[in-house]
Each structure stands twice: as C-alpha cells, then as structure tokens.
Length: 553
Image (cartoon, rainbow, N blue to C red; front, side, top):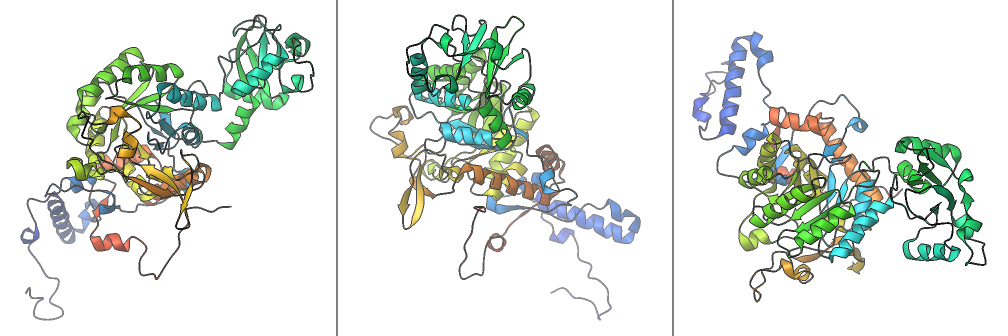
C-alpha cells in the first residue's frame, strides 16, 4: 500500500506516472501525456493556459483503443460544451449526396413497412427525404414517385391542357381520373401554345348541359391571371397573394403558355417552411433499386424518367460487382440523378464505391432492430465504429454518408451525427406513424403497426429476387414484429428535430459542419460508459413511470 507520508502536512503523494500507464493503449498514453503536462504546469504556472483539457477523449483516441473493440450508441457519451446561442439558432441543414441538400438530416428507410408516397411526402415537407421501397411492380413504384412530385408542384412545367373545342364532359372525366379541376386552355390543347383561356370548377359546376364546348364557359385569356416568363417561384407567390387568385399562368412575350402555378402550393409553402424542394420547385424524393434484381436496369431507368432525385442501390453488402455495374450504368445513362451506394461497414468497401463514382453512402450492416443477419451470418460491425471509420474516409472524397440502422431514439441520431454522418436513416422509429404503409391494430390495449425486416421470410415472399440462389433454401435474416403508434409525422418530426437541436446546443455546436470540424479537430470530446453509467443515464430508481414524446396540443 502506498504511504501518504509521516503526517497530515506531508504534502501530495508523488506517484510514478509511467508505472500507471499502459503503452499499448492510446487512451492511457494520451492521459499520461496530460498528467505530465499538468505536473510541469504546477512547477511553472506560466504553462497552465497551454495545458489541454483533462475531460474526455477525441474520437480518434476512442476508436484507436486496444482490443479491437466495436462501439455502438450506448457505449459512448458526448461531453458538454459552452453555450452562447439559443436552441433555435442551431442549423440542421446538411447534404445527403454530393449535390443534394436537405433542411433536416433525416431520411426514411426504403422498407415496405416504412416508405411509400405518403411517407415520402411527409419527410420532404419536414425538410428530409423519403426513399420509396422497391418491393413492388415497377409501374407502382414509379406512380408513387410521381405522386410525390405532383403533391407540391411549384412550377408545373407540363400541365394538362385542353382546347376550346373540348367539352365540359371531358373536364368531368379529367376530374374523375386525375383529380384535376382547373386547366389552361390553349389554341390547340397543347402545352407551349398560345393561351386563350382557363376553365375551373366555378366555370363548370352549374352547367347542366355537359356536352357544350369549353369555349362557351371558359374565362378568356384577357381575364386570366398571368405573369411574364422568366420569373421566380417567390415572385409568383407574391403576385398570387396580391391578385387573390387560385391559379397563375406563366406566359412568354407572345402569350404562349410556359408553366402553371396553384394557390394550394402557396398554402403548403406557408404551412411547411422547412420543406425540401429541388430546382423545379418539387418535393425531393428518393427511391430504391435492388442490385441483384433482374429488372434493376429497367426499374432504375423508369425512376429516373419519372423525375426521382436520388436512387439508392439497396443491398446488405454493397461491395459486389452487381452494385458496381448498376452504379456505372446510372452514372453513364442518367448523370443528373444522384446515386447512393451501400451498405458498407469498412473502409475497403467505402474506397471501392467512392472510386466508382458514388454520390453518397449508406453505412450499417446487420444493426437494424428487425435484422438478425449478424446472428445468422456473423458478419457486420458495431454501428458507431462503422460510421466513424467510413465517414472519415468519405470526408476525404467530400462524399456524405448516411447512418443506416440502430437509430432507436434521438440520442442515437445525435451520436451518429457526431461520428461524421451527414444524415440518419430511420426505419422502426417511423414505422408507427400514420404516414407509414399498413393498418393499425390493437394488441394488449396497445395501438400498433406491423414492422418487418427486408430479410424476413414474410418480406422475401413479396419479391422472389430477394431469395437466396438456392431455390430450396432461403436464409431468413430478419423478423416480423410490431411498433407502437407514434401519431402523425407532422408532430413527430418537429419533436425529433428539436431534440437534435438541443443535443447540439449542449455540446456548444450550432451547425452540422461545425460538428464535423469538432470531430476531426479533436475538440469534440467523448467518454466510454461503463454498464453502471449507462444505467445511470436512463430512467432509474422509480417504481413506475410514464413517458410522452411530445405534447398533443
């Protein structure tokens, strides 16, 4: 036992630093270095300001620790920083690919129990993006993409047009088939021709004879609200508010129709200020294709033609020749469409896909809540370790990465962002909202929705291309379960975003670029949590408790 001296005033104990250090541990070597500097500072007070902080470790030190440890969300905690700004000053703008920016770092997973057109619309309205799954017929997936694009049109560059000789009954058919109640009338019924009028519900509602020509009921061009091409969406919105009209036709100097805008889109701009749009004023939308599917080229081409903004090549292991071939074909034939490759978990996979031209990467193998692939195949990686190492290499290529899997709460999302991810992809968190596919059901007085892994037997039955090459042996790598009702996306996502803002504020970070700067400079500090520390960080020492994600008011 070490002696504390001959008396109470014998002074501080002088222990050998070297005897307490472990040369094989970068963490302890770093701490030893800090101890040495502190001892020197005691001897020379002028050096005190130069002594680094004792608290925590940089991510580089954490992930260089011995024992080949893999760390995931509960293993680490981020240490607090200094706050000199408000929570609403935290900027969550990010990139999901080289060129595509989002107003929120969130996206929904391309799973058949998570993302179809309703989810994709809701995600885009909240500033993120949804990826529509490929477990459907090509025409059905394309129709879902088009529904997203039509939801908020901005400039409708190819509106349905009619000619003066068309009948009111033709308008009835158009309303029944496509839900369109107002159309511009051009001289020959074609887009780009001279505008001669406009016909809407107020022109046709009380017409008893539905076989009369539109020329007899339409509002003439002289009375139609128009603006001159070219113009911006902001200018159009101002004019529509000033003129108090429901439609505004954009025409050139010769009166030819160039595009159309609607009042319903103006209201959506007001109600969803964080919504994410492309250059055409449409909601952004992503879609998935399976690298191993026989129809992958046909599907990818159809999605690109439908106007999808980004395509995800969906594969558990992205380091395959099939994925490289699909990636090369998309970049050669549809260069305007951004391509996200994956999934990856190690830097070797990252380098190969980035060298092949990927615009973004999905990181995560076997870490989803409904995935059993790590148990079945014994291949994967702890998620925080995967995100940190993959994002570090991708940053050298200036390519964003998506943390895909294991995001069970807002804390996990924040930790994924602190490891270098530009965006987090969510499955189970979103499967219980109203906008996800499927119907609610009750079990033990709980309102639930079905949620299943894409590698589960149930999901595989929907797509024979997902089966193993052996026709008589199908390897099940997922489960089917249920998740609790979370209400509507319009309440859940604002709560989620605000929680992330609060987390960054507590770190003293006001933007995601600043967060990554802190990560790679070492200013962002972490600690590894013991099992007791993990227990302490959650709710504890209560007989019972209730929790509520957000206010219902």
